[in-house]
Structures are given as C-alpha cells and as structure tokens.
Length: 223
Ligand SMILES: C[S@@+](CC[C@H](N)C(=O)[O-])C[C@H]1O[C@@H](n2cnc3c(N)ncnc32)[C@H](O)[C@@H]1O
Image 1 (cartoon, rainbow, N blue to C red):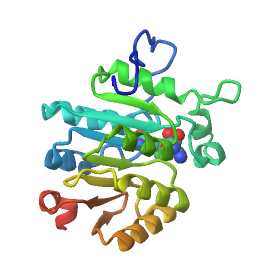
Image 2: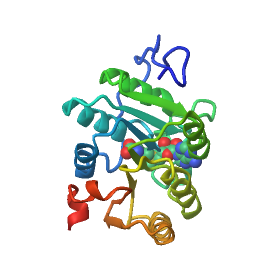
Image 3: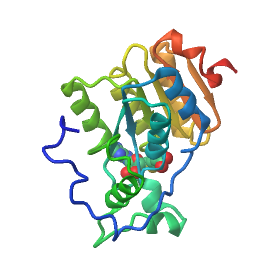
Image 4: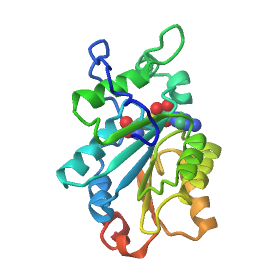
C-alpha cells in the first residue's frame, strides 16, 4: 500500500452511502482456491475488479490459508463496453453514474471495507496498460495475475502481452470468460501459440503457468 499511497485510500472512507452490492461473474470458481493454494502468492494482481467480488473471494482464500498476500486491483472503475451498451438495464444501472460518471470505485471500496479486507486489497485506479507499466517500474512481480478487464480481442491480447512478462518465474495467469467470449478465446489461444506456453482451459476460465512445478497441483491442468 505504501508503495502507491501516502495515505491509505480507505482512510476516512464512509461506506454508508454505497449499498452492499457484490455483483460479479465467475468469482466463485474453484480455480482460485486451487491456484492460490498451489502458488501461495505474495502478490496477486487482478486486472478488472468491478465491485470487488473476485478480489474479495481471493482475499478470503488468502486469509483462510494464513498467507501474507497483497492483492493489487487494477481497474479504471469506469466499466466496459458491455456495461454501457448492454441490453440489460441492470448492467447500465449498476454503473451508478452520477452526472454521467460511474461511481463503481466507491461501491468497490464499500464492499472491501464492510468485509474487513483493507489490509489485503490495494486498489490502483488506472488503465490495464498503465497499471502494467507502473508495476514494472515499481519492480513488482506478481505470482498470480487474474485477467478480467475488457473482453474484446485487441484489449485481451494487449493485456496478455502487458502482464505475462511481469509474472514471477513460478507464477500463473488466470483469465476469465474463456470460450464464452470469442475475443477472449481467440486472444488467449493466439498468445499461447506465440509464447509457446501451454494453455489449459474450460468454459469460463483459462490458465497459463510459468513454472512446471505448479502445473501438476491444479486440477484444470490435469484433466
Ligand atoms: C467483467 S468486470 C470485472 C469483474 C470482476 N473481476 C468480478 O469477477 O467481479 C470488467 C472490469 O474491467 C474494467 N476495465 C475494462 N477495460 C479496462 C481497461 N482497459 N483498464 C482497466 N480496467 C478496465 C471495467 O471497469 C470493469 O470493472
């Protein structure tokens, strides 16, 4: 936290005006428990956090395993195309726009504070590309990266290119919405082909491991 802030973003924050709203997608997948248990990461980077459901789930796992892990959450907290253009009014409403500007960040902060995860979750409000540059310059090498930001092909490919090189030599990358979203699937498969790193996937999630040791301990990889 001190690396990025002079004062904690949680200091003096009052969650009361923001409803407890932990809307999220795919946050309860068993891959989080398996990967965190296998890697025992010191640093997790989540790219695409929304209201914090997946970050909070990972924080719960980290706590239950007694790990001293920080989860850096990188998001603009401005939403993605599907939240602006989606046919489901619920998604547009959930941006909670105030004079047109999304208030997602405060919903996220409120969710984290209510669950007492401020000691684990570190928000970094920026684009995925800038986030990777900031981490690189700060010398931070995550052991686990969870990619769940924009889902269009060029954005996913850019995120894969930006984050893969940052991951520690024994770390893993998990991506959301594999198979379900064409852009994600195409980018992930092409990236794996280009790097030669094996990719393991099923409907909803894919995973790429840097080191061999961790692979054998994760069931998605074994099946
Ligand atoms: C699908 S949601 C993340 C859901 C979250 N992981 C969960 O499971 O609850 C995608 C998020 O990515 C963020 N996002 C989209 N494009 C981004 C970009 N280029 N840089 C940073 N964040 C981005 C959006 O603001 C949105 O909050």
